[in-house]
Length: 256
Image 1 (tube, helix red, strand yellow):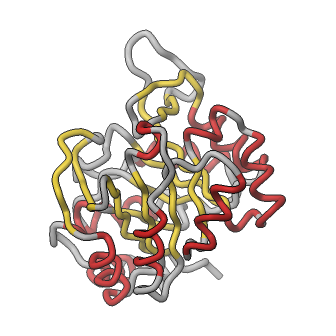
Image 2: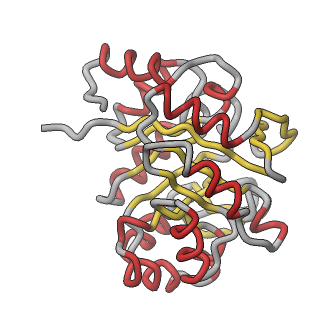
Image 3: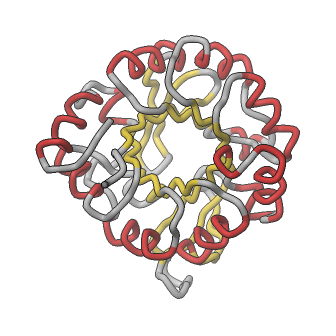
């Protein structure tokens, strides 16, 4: 029996507003995070992800007040990431209403953090966020993909597929794989990257970056991912969560 796919709207938050750009640049305002969270909950979202996109680059923690306000308005799991550097940061987010916590930059700097969080709160709380791109000229990794940090602003030279596998071994209960090349382009998910990471990890894999049409969600589902995350197409009214689920069902995929 196949596990039902999850459809997850993503709220990229900067200075208290949802923003969205292309390849993490040229950000434009997409609305109030609490209002959007409530809308997606009503549309039938399976989860909602809240990412404070400037917390790491600004050297600050995620805004807890916004997390609490969003959590009070929805009835589905909430994953929160951005600026998480310690077990104490995770505890604060869980107390504010998060169900899971996304970790990216700090885990690359100190991979033991994933294990510490998992031991304290359980693997199911830990989502490792992997912002990956195809290697630019002058950089090469075995898989051809490298990890970026600080909201896609910095390349690391770390192999993205190997890092996803290591993160899962260290305690991450899920991998959120975001294609920085596809992010915000609405040109489709990076299907080869999804297949490569799917082959390397057994924990749930969330596809992110590039959704533009319902056909893009179907194509990504066929790589074997467990969940499909998107932002632009939902924020700007191109698609609803229900339309995506209908397309997945029509293609023979189980959805919630």
